[in-house]
Image (cartoon, rainbow, N blue to C red; front, side, top):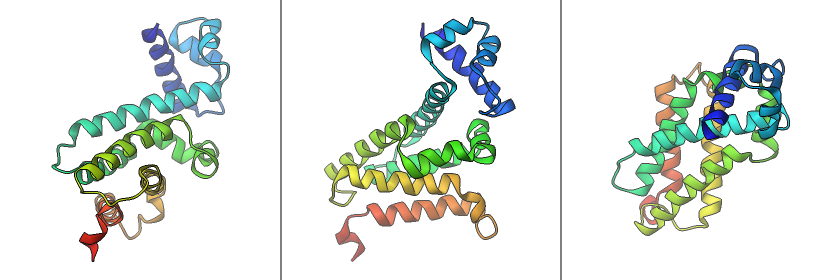
Length: 193
């Protein structure tokens, strides 16, 4: 069952990368996946729900890969590594670039109005590292949910807005600035005095 769902999500990714969300239909996805339309409709009632699950799957894979690469000593260092790694990976991700380049109205919902399932998954991962940082004293005290949200919206802003600073910061420098920003925000207050 999961294999079939992944095949459908793979087909959706191919369609969206090629044609965009507005020009992709569930029928296109079914055809590309080699399954019937009812099979697709059994899992996703519309293209919006399919796109949401696709984005969640793709972003979760990026988050998980970056988490596996983070072997720093403290939770704060690991979290900063994961955040910067996620942003750098997303900048090279064809689907993410398709959304930033041509599907800004879809992104706007999740940037300005509400958290989607991908963002909630990211919040869970960030919150876990914040709590680990509270335990190892590498992250300042505070509500872990609030700290995680501030980290997420900072990372999200850098991920989606790099073109706004391209004239002054190349990608490597922008990621370094993100690291500095997060480190300053998360560092225990006594260490900043």
